Image 1 (tube, rainbow, N blue to C red):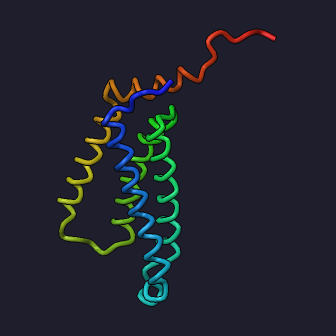
Image 2 (cartoon, rainbow, N blue to C red; image 1 turned 180 degrees about the vertical axis):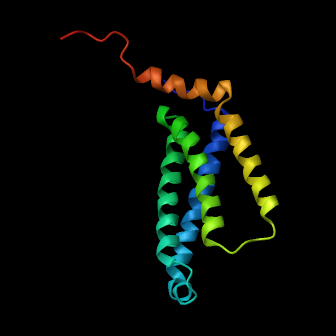
Image 3 (cartoon, one colour; image 1 turned 60 degrees about the vertical axis):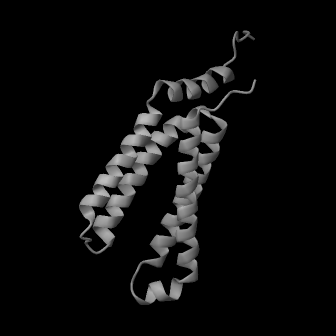
Length: 143
């Protein structure tokens, strides 16, 4: 039975796709500029691995959200928290301090608030719950 994907779930899938593409770009640029990054001590291995991991994770999440897989809701909740935590730990531990940190912090908080508002809305949770119920056998027959 084909189900209608709510527009908010489509929006989340597009956001996950953009995160995937952004990290794919990060990985590609790291490979292309590897000698320059190594020369200036910019941790090319870390940049490549983190870009590749987030590329794969966000691509898999995009697929799960798009198809309405039951696990995608939990993965999106964890992925949003994980990506925000990784971004800020990377920014605070590996990058030079930036004067625009209040704006970036506010932007991160607003983005997470929007994502969590969508994820915890009744329509979204119902959409992903429906997928889990469709997979359970109605009346399992004892052997």
